[in-house]
Length: 343
Ligand code: SAM
Ligand code: SF4
Image (tube, rainbow, N blue to C red; front, side, top):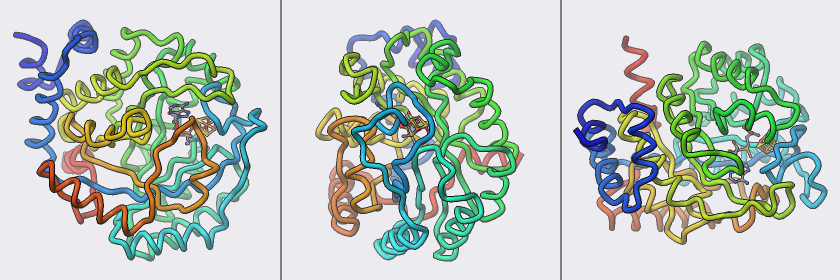
């Protein structure tokens, strides 16, 4: 059986078969298959997550990222708890059901204050997703008790040597420990990786895909690596869009009922990158609802913008209708998470 047919029927592939799919020149059949599996498994609804980038301060020094602590060209700023809640409130009014709080890895808020912010957003009736990097079990636990529903922590790459080279001072084991702790605490766990990192092979991307399946991730964010001129990887730029899209489509075939976002990095590389992703297996969009902070939150150049909260949602609604999709008004819990809970 050919890999695409096999994946549609069994949702399982060998590493060799994944590599074959990642290497195909014309991937249109792969994208069509991923779109079909997406429709049959999670439906035509698109979940919106309102993204608030809460801080550009980071204690880590990841070579690829504009927020790395050695980048002197970035404006460092941290929202106050009140500002965060105000943005969440405006997003709730515009119809958002989930807020994602993302930021550099730092301790400036203080864990108790952050727990207070989570409680404040929960009081608005919203689901809360955190993406704040590596923390201790106790801190993850505190946030879970405060009401946090989901946590996004990409593995970035499963090549341990490459990971520790690109993320100096960080350990691959601790990254794994964090993902395990999040699972143990009952979070809906989102992970993922970048595609096209310098030194990353297609073989290694196949390992990344198998890793997400084994974890198992309830959500998988796949983003092309985009070179940032203010980082040590300034000159490593190439267009990683197609390979990212193929990796994302393969993940949909192997993990039919997870949530998969059409990532901002995809939209940054192609004018309609988010929609291309939605037609190739994705079912989530994370528009920015955090106001001006997005200007300073420069992970890579040319980051796609969302515009005003209400207007963007209305525009999105129209564009989704045109491709036979609609905004799902529910909280958007991953079906993979629900299925696990019922076991
Ligand atoms: N600090 C937290 C962390 O590292 O998990 C959350 C924020 S971090 C900026 C979110 C994600 O941005 C990272 O997981 C990484 O995959 C992505 N990212 C950073 N630099 C990037 C780049 N140059 N191109 C594409 N994605 C990038
Ligand atoms: Fe900090 Fe996250 Fe960027 Fe690494 S990827 S420098 S931890 S914000």
